[in-house]
Length: 130
Image 1 (cartoon, rainbow, N blue to C red):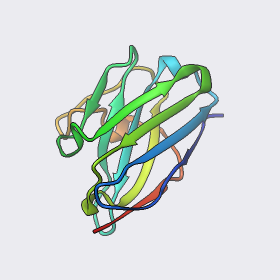
Image 2 (cartoon, rainbow, N blue to C red):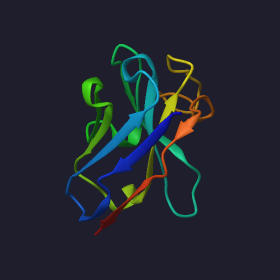
Image 3 (cartoon, one colour):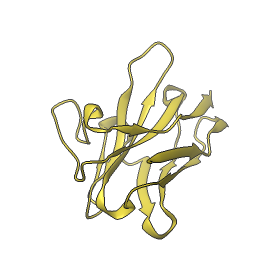
Image 4 (cartoon, one colour):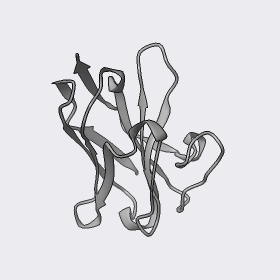
């Protein structure tokens, strides 16, 4: 049974940093596409960053240069280092995995398509104050 659990969310001031973690179980961490997605109040969920088999990373344009996705296969943990945070980064952040293996890509953003991610964590809330 695949399970994902995010942690690390909280409230920080604009310009600050947050490190999100996502511990996964029930699948081979190194052999599957994973990603971070977010949903702000009143908005649709959107892709933030993805990491494919072979550690190929992709980012939404609005986080390039500020966020870094990484993973530790030995710890079954996915990370999202978020720097230079802005109030518009306020959202619930979710990690997700594509159990089929490599990432599936579309046209919406450079990272894996949301519909291809079939297991999701419950999310962790990040609030940025101005």
